[in-house]
Length: 312
Image 1 (cartoon, rainbow, N blue to C red):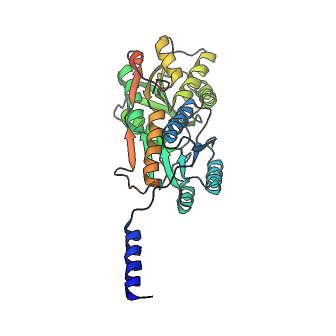
Image 2: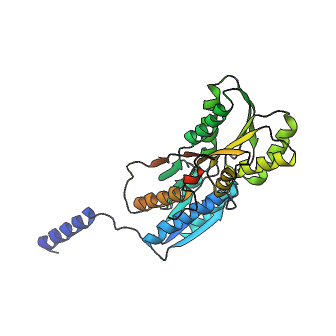
């Protein structure tokens, strides 16, 4: 090989090395959510699918429900890795224990995009500002009670979003010494059935309750059902989500649920997918975590609220 030939080959190799990596096609997406029975997660999946099909109309999307079971979600991530997905859209059911599974996926060359809740080490994350959501829902309680009363927080699975909502709520209550928290450690499983079961027990324990903060709308609906079954009506309920069922409850004017700090699951998850695709294409996000502001929905403004089912 002549010196000139070697020089040409070296120049060509340098040129190839200097070129940016080719964009990777988006062909397969795996989605794992906390609970598919929750309309919130149905809306997140729709947001992901719509944004993904704008990029590749033939993209393969697989959605599974972890049912708030960490071991089940870890197994789902393993299945996504085996299937060779390009992006895992992750609604982590545990705020910290999911970390090894996230790392395993990334080591396999898969982008992990977290939505609704954080996941340690995820490439990108898009969430509601859940501390603010909890604070807004509980400030409503404080205002309606004039800073004095016996309240309950119905907790849930310890994902980051629920931890943050409870933190925001407690931060507000802590500023009012005449607000007494009767219970804050009961896990309503973030579901209607769980909220019903927990609230039945709480109503048996406490003769007087002034207000309840439920960590999401399904929990709030279950709590209201328990109150009706036991003929208790002395308290009111606030929550987080702004779900379609809550829109109807607020508009009816006769529900015990009086306020909900809204989220936009469709926009949230779609944004996370778009950011994940950018990472897939070699782009480093300027802000890897994006927080979306909630809006407190009440009977006074529900008519103007653009909810989860609004036309996009």
